[in-house]
Image 1: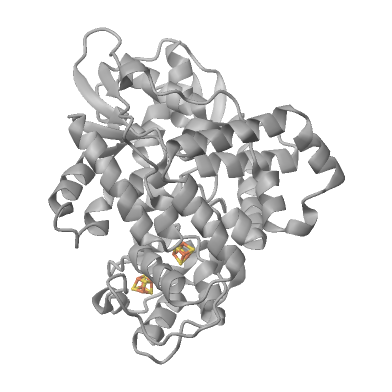
Image 2: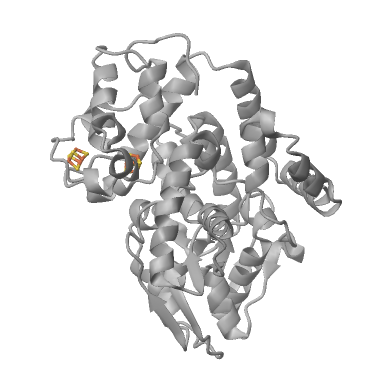
Length: 431
Ligand code: SF4
Ligand code: SF4
């Protein structure tokens, strides 16, 4: 994020609240869980250091200088610090608000503004445009143009675009919303749930959405996939576009509340965490405040939902050594670590092995691999070292960004390891 004007202090409705910033008592318990501090050893790249900088801005001792914003931009928003903090500093919220201040009060470069407009205002709000972009990318991959572009390194001078291209997973079958927007339960319907289809998931990992629907149906759920739903807004909010995130949140609230479901099941940890916080995001919106709270109380990660059921017993054994990578927004933001492991342990024959630092960020973090390539690579290197020690045949995880990053790490290291979503493994065990 580049800034040329230097506003002093925070201002406006999305300013970090002083009471949040002043909760920090400088104990340092968050330091050793912070990936950027662990990698650099620098106070300025730690949660405590970042909070000190935010306080300095809040007290008008520092401006939102480009140098200061670099320390904010290096934060992964993994929220490991939030889970470790005994004082209850809501780090995710204050970092999101600081980025919103940077996005709205500093002058962004023309290229950044265009990229943000395209991503947050043109593509993410429209499932139809996202799907068109998905088809165009699929044609690009299958026509051989991608091979040519990579061989000739045509995009190399374009930096970020080249990195995005390198990250592109092979696109398979896209997830299609079922006819009528509802999939019946297998057998007698015992409950009715909604499912978030998502923005990246149906295009990059359509098979995960299909597996989620099958697993829920197998467990007596009628699954509604409302057509009016949109992207959850997490990418917009994390990048400082809180207004864009609010617009998307309102659409989702309307779509799912109208579907009259007992739970909104989400298979992407980042989306689930954002949706559980709609109440906070819309607390100043008189028309949506109550609905947002009601909606947020319905949101469940898919493993959280399944682990609370009397789970239908898997019928097929899976002879595989599996390690689980905690997705940050499931482990730290939603504080869910046991449920995905419980689902994996329910699969007969599956050997669950823990790796070191399973709950440390793999470096995916939304668009972090593009904006902070060096730190993302360092964290991935660290993660793949732990994977190698655990010697799994499968890495299971709970978020599409983690799946992309871990698959890229395995490719880079030439490791013969499959990356799968927890719910995909359970689905296979039902077949
Ligand atoms: S753990 Fe919490 S209170 Fe302690 S230094 Fe970190 S943010 Fe501050
Ligand atoms: S959110 Fe993650 S990267 Fe950012 S300060 Fe907290 S622990 Fe460090």
